[in-house]
Amino acid sequence: MNSGKKNALLFIGALLFMAVIVFNNRHKYNEFLEEFDYSKAKSTGLPVLLQVGFENCSYCKAMKPILKDLKENYSDKFSVAYIDINYDQHAMSKYRANVFPTMIFLDKDGNELYRQIGYMEKSDILKKWQDLSN
Image (cartoon, helix red, strand yellow):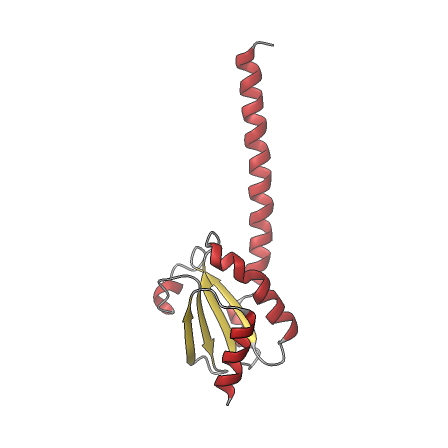
């Protein structure tokens, strides 16, 4: 086999490998979006912590484990939701979110109580909920 054909096969193999990785990550990300669906969160009758962000935002990615932890351990106090602007084109204007992540604390009726632009530590989120409930 000449080197041109060999290089072409290696290139095609690399492209297929990358496509599998992208598809697998996209599938996991879509599961994450479904898990943090805003309509489900607001139907609980609890206050909602809403993060507006997008998939490739490094700070939004850093918030994912925090959101999962909050959802698992504080679901009796508040719901957690995530909206990705790549999937909901109107979210930026609807929630006035221009910098990401935007964390919006909503009461059980959907009224905004507080807004934080940028990354938030779990402890800061919990402290803010405590302050808002007093």
